[in-house]
Image (cartoon, rainbow, N blue to C red):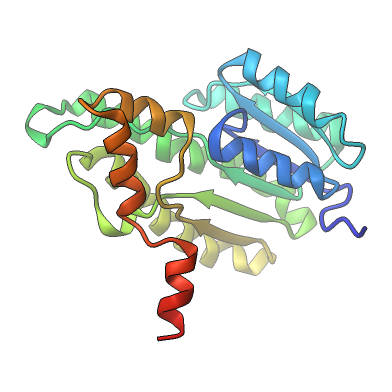
Length: 228
């Protein structure tokens, strides 16, 4: 079987759980050498051991607090030291705080989320770009559907995700002259551990999860509408 990313080097932030875990898995299955990071070491180390049994690509976990610039610099530098290059960066790490109205959201909470969800993307791209340009590689920024459509009682989160979309467009313009592609994906509701944690904080977790699923069309519904 042809492996689409054979021996290419990929960095994935927030790669130990949820969407990030799935991203790491698919790259490894397609032959990549993946460096993924998260703050929680046990989940990362367990995923590394699991995926390295596949016999296709490989992965290496690095503990990293993506809200700290020095940790980001170390992540990029260590990847290049080990593998000599970077072909792809996936900015995925982030957090959705509990839903809270604007009136009771503090400026400090907003600033902290901007640092984690947005500025970390900027900094990881900044330090990886010199190496991505050498390989004419690419950046994938993970935003969210709510960055376009909004979400109730989640102004800081929606603002960070909307900003990721705009930053991606600006960065794509800048990096086109180096043949580095910069794209963004905006997932809808995905049943991740974070989404389950948020649902658990509501009076009826099962109902919250169901409401989230019902708020977007399924693949089958989209196919049906496409043929109408």
